[in-house]
Amino acid sequence: MMMTTKYCWMLLASLLLIFGCISESQQLIIRSINVPSAVKVGDVDYVILDCDYALENTSSRGLVVKWFFNDTQVVYQWIYGRRPSADEPAAKYVDLTYKASGDPFTEYRAMKLDKPGFDLTGDYKCVISTFADERAANSFMVIYSTEKKFDFEYRKKSIDNKDGLEATCRAEGLYPKPTLNISVKNVPDNKTSQPIFTLEDGLYNVLLRVDYLDEELPEVAELKCDLDIPRTNHSLTRKTIYYSGNFVDRASINLILLPILLAIFILFH
Image (cartoon, rainbow, N blue to C red; front, side, top):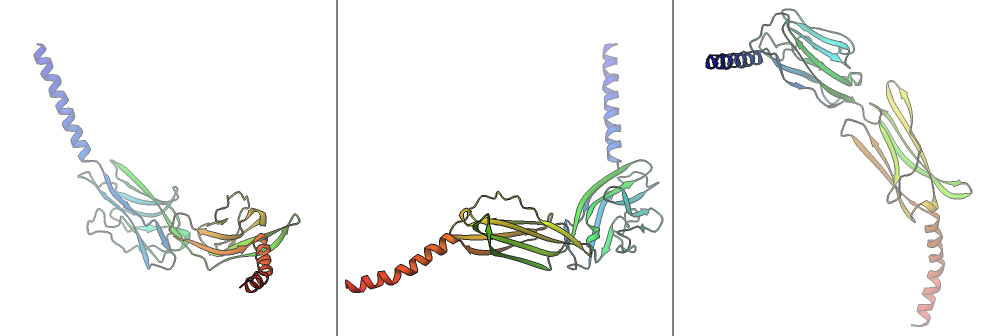
């Protein structure tokens, strides 16, 4: 009797394992989501956001492909057996005739965006669903605009009756919101000045001013301004050299001493 019970349990466990494997093999799966991470405005004619999935022998009943923009907004939808549709902000860019594959169950899984604008920057989530199952995957895309202008300069300035300078860095026509930082080589970065941002036609202009006392700086100071667009590999640096008052005073003394030293040299030779 005990042996019979043991074999029954073993048979039951085997059946559960088999049915579990079958169930697992029939689940809808997303193989990959392919979304460009960063695209410069005007550099490409189009981009393709692809969500490659497989039904894995499950029923296609109720098959729907949706692309969400920033979590909640459906910008693309394809219901199997119908034509795809699109909504803003993607609607004016989407090519609704594009087919990602020759498989009728996956042909309209992707979005082809013609000449994408920076208003398409954001998080994209593809959701594949049937009556039996649902899967989702997401990825972030930045459509960025680089600077139309980038300048870095300084001017002498009296600060609390002491010699110093004001360094000014500005950039125009960027997207998304950039970072801007002014620093001096081999000088601790302890300034608290924050960039000032303005928007013009949807693009960012940024201005940063930082004051330094001559006594804070080496005699020959290398000033630097770094511009960076987050989530992209776009970064630029402008540099300039500033000669502090200490350096000028020392140089002036050397100019005065030079003729004297030269006269002494001639006298004794």
